[in-house]
Length: 353
Ligand code: TRP
Image 1 (cartoon, rainbow, N blue to C red):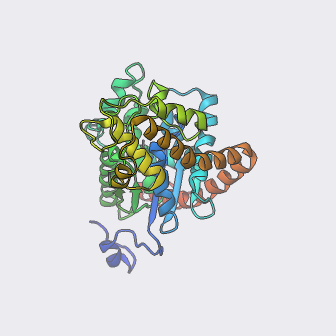
Image 2: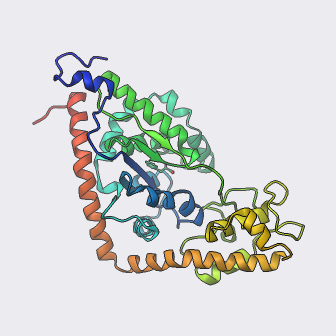
Image 3: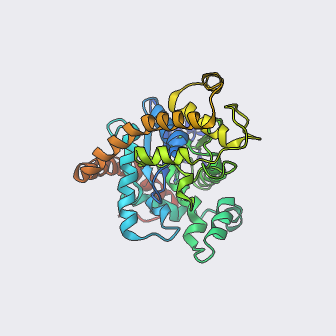
């Protein structure tokens, strides 16, 4: 480390903890792409956790529209969905007075830092990202350089705010590892600047599977809409999708994810919607058949989603107020991002005027 040369008297302390964290709370940052309507899986796997964390941490949540264009997007839809997703964050309980809520493209520092990190990232190490390999085979007609460098932009999102923890799904672990490597590399080549973030991956357990192919994870981009419960689904749609969910041969309500993934998945959904444990559900429904059970699951899910959807509809209906919330969020985020970027520019050797 080249830290001690000509540094302030604090350099020793800083050597131990590269970025002296004087903030009382640790910082968390996360984001979702506005590429589709959000699902109950995203609500349970991410949003609900964010809401629980926001009071305990200094929290930033963004809608990552720059990431979204690594796959072709229709401009009008992207514009609409970015606002949809922001409103859904709030409907789920993200409080813009507590957390910083913003749209990524409103904070140009994300793209600016990404460039610098691109110049530190190895072609080989980025080539190893499994999500790139998956997505480039899914979108073989549009394997653009942005898709390749997607994880470097994600690193910029995280490092700009010196996030300590990044709540993400297991599929993002490798991107977090890359982020840590880039942060360490910058800190090493220049001087301690970035906090080294940790992934914050919720325990698995209530992963929701497709309603039509319960061996697969429920996905927002499933071609078959009947597979997925969206947070904007109407009561009737929810009831219908549950009614038509694939079940297995058998008739009693017993949890067996291996042999009877369809019923097991409905039990998971009922557990999420009601808070009843799997064992309680088994005893509640002993002696009942699939039909009765599905009806109960449909009702519990309707009751679970309806308040979120209703809050969403109210928030989304007032676009001006939504935008002014996002404007404030972006201003707040920018102030912080700008401080980091200024340091980075200086250390990189860019001329200050
Ligand atoms: N890549 C993430 C995903 O698909 C989304 C994302 C972009 C993100 N930037 C981020 C998540 C920063 C956490 C932190 O889930």
